[in-house]
Length: 258
Ligand SMILES: Nc1ncnc2c1ncn2[C@@H]1O[C@H](COP(=O)(O)OP(=O)(O)O)[C@@H](O)[C@H]1O
Ligand SMILES: [Mg+2]
Image (cartoon, rainbow, N blue to C red; front, top):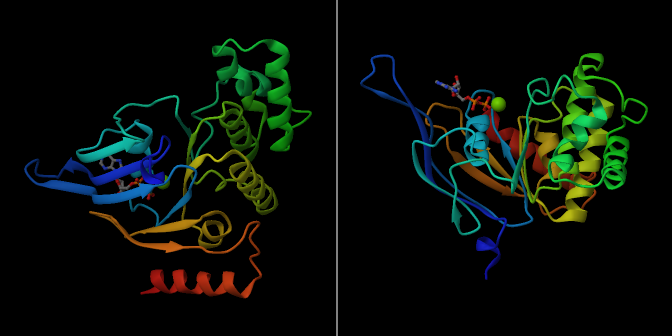
């Protein structure tokens, strides 16, 4: 079996999403004819300006939004619905946490659904709550947390479930700069240790270069598409002060300045 078609790869062919235009007769394309293969175990970054259709594309891959045309496969299987293989970290945590559950109960929710015994659940939730810097806040409810803390709970919950594919939509956008840097490092480390397939959406070039093996550039919409893919042949952990890093930064920056 080739890498490209192995179990946790994502294959997109001529994918599009359209809505009826104002007159009802014309068709308005958000994304049009997107082709992409993300290999099993790859860290792929989708980079593009606000409103270009990044969330739309990610939500189609997640199975939350229906495509209007084209194909989407995970491994060899055509998919059109959400599945246990894919977990999503949204831009805003508010909508995804259960307000009536504590931090620990939120993180353990999926594990409880899987009927994992309590001691094992606690071990895992302790680990990920610690990882995202929320130790000591286990018994708080979402309403008692800041936006950044809620975002970290969401991340801990998704990681605790150990999905093979992680779909992340600007997950660190609401965090302060220091927490954001920590989370980027941790995510990168977790990915290198676990071999998950990751699609990470951002509009931040530095974040894209710190994390991704490849960076796909989306054009401004409508009818957005992935116009360029950059390889990032730099070793991990990445050094933003390295000349090679800066050179790639400038290349991608120039792409958007055009
Ligand atoms: N349900 C919808 N109906 C019509 N247009 C939509 C709908 N959802 C999103 N859009 C439009 O699709 C475009 C891309 O949105 P989005 O995928 O959220 O972009 P991004 O995540 O890159 O900021 C925007 O112009 C948005 O207004
Ligand atoms: Mg978005």
